[in-house]
Image 1 (cartoon, rainbow, N blue to C red):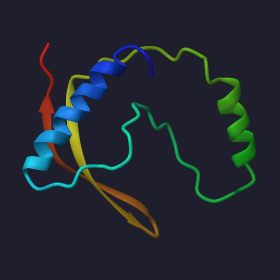
Image 2 (tube, one colour):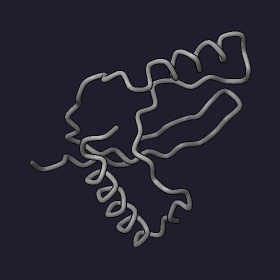
Image 3 (spheres, one colour):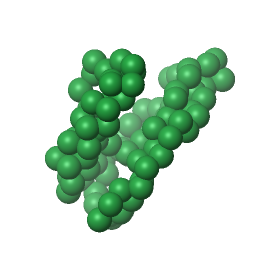
Length: 94
C-alpha cells in the first residue's frame, strides 16, 4: 500500500483516540496499513511455494480501491480460526 498511506494512519489514530475515550484499550503494536489476502495455518506443503510467489510479485501493481467506509470489528481467536463480528461502521466523507 502506498498512495493514501499517511491519510490512513491519521484516520486510524483518530479512531483509536475516540475508542480510547469509550474505554477501549489502545493497540500497543504500530499500525501498518496493509491488505490481508489470505492466511496460511501451519507449515503445510504449499507454504514455501506461496512465500516464493508473494516475494516474486511483491512489487506487482494490483490496482486501486476507493475506501468509503470504516468498519470496527471484534476479533476472537478460536481453535477453528478467528471469528470477526462487526461492531460499528461509518461512511467516509469526500
